[in-house]
Length: 176
Figure (cartoon, helix red, strand yellow):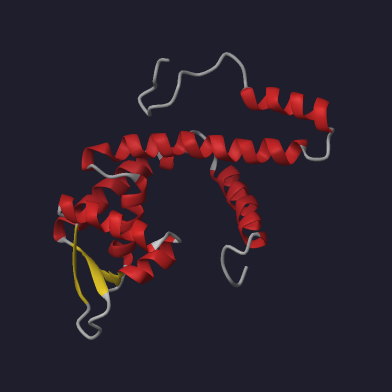
């Protein structure tokens, strides 16, 4: 099958989610059909946006996950954070943080070292090169509107609000 630049299959001549809706409605009625279609759409848009973002970040050998870790260091007051705190803020397993920092370290965008006052803690720190790359990569992502296409600001705000409501209901963060 032909692959698009983002590694995704070529577009279909029909909307598979609309077809799934039709089939779902026929087999299970109307109650769960909107939920199934919404979740399936969210998952598909996630694939599409991640492919666009990862394509855009290729010049810096970054994935979006590495970019997020780099930006977390970029925005920290001191340019350093304990790996455990990074995992909590990125909402990923500690092993994932280790792998992300391994990649950033290999690229020269971050370093890893002991915490000055707690020998049990490892700190990740952004390098000068990492700061430059964070700026360049962010300019590129901003220019392509983070893969959101031609959606207007008010549509994006509405979408963010809807998704926030789902995150609050799921207990994604406190104070929702």
